[in-house]
Image (cartoon, helix red, strand yellow):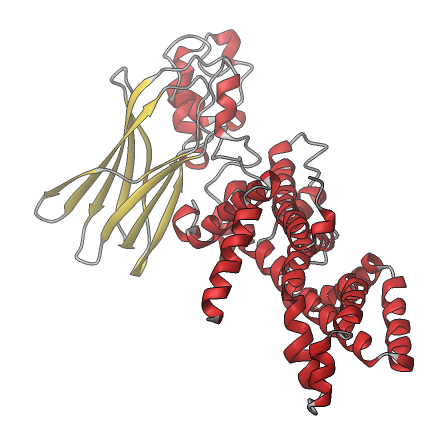
Length: 468
């Protein structure tokens, strides 16, 4: 019977809740956040970002401070988009004393501004001779790299940067198309290597390159001279001028990945802090109201002391004293957030304790503990749900504030940490808006979702708040 009544109550509640448009909108936002958390492994462009967010080597192939790729829609000159090429055609030839492996990648270049670099990776062992050729749309076969790579006995990742390794080669190729007057003004060490690779064979290729669009082939040849030599599973990264959904920061990290990874921590911090705070506040308020007299007065004085303490400065001091951790942060916030529901709970509990069933319980010899936790607290559970929803935005904002000041948990990826890095790197002064706006909007939408849900629940559970 109780289960049937609960189902009927939930049905009635949903019937009222769906009439609140703001509440439904907040619920949709919450559903989106939960979808991101559940399917995060499939949504993250970089699967190891959670554990290697501050590992510089993990992001070394990507462009620095590049705008989002979609900004190309608003410019006439299309900048090269960061790409990773993983599909290739493999050809192997046995030449008797040696084996030659060829890996050919296709790259469709349709931009006005060349990539920053061509970075080649491969799993190699022994001492293979690695040769890299780029076949341009005009038929030019340009050898940009050749070297013997000492990889050792165990397979390991090799990394070849064409921009760093092939400046002289590209300069000697491109200078054939320069006039002596222009060539005298160009220093080989200062040119952008990829400008020569992706430019038409016309005068001014170094100073004013004109894009040679079309299909390029990047061919990696591994010459294996012994059984110990090997190379396999190569891939190529072309860091462009624009990158990803939300661009990159000054440490080459993908902002979109950071924003997605921060959703679960925002929900965890917000929900956990709110649940602990409301649970403490409800129990404290009920006990204070039930006991009454001098005990109630004493508990209210303790409550007033906590309310009068300025929260943010205390959190800053405690975060500086203790080792930054998500768990200590939740504990510190719960230590002060519990006061938010005490006054309302106490006034409601004062009315409940005068009810007939409470008097009957006392007459039957029920203990204070049983009356409080068996009869009074359960009545206040609906109010607790709305309070939890309203407490979450505050917890998320406080975490972001603490992290923004550099006192957050650096072992996790939170929106506050992203904003903190942006602040210390001068993102606003340098015009890197894509580093600041997305995490800021994420915090705003998270707060908006739970505020809308909380306000709607308040209207339903407290009819006096209804405006219609």
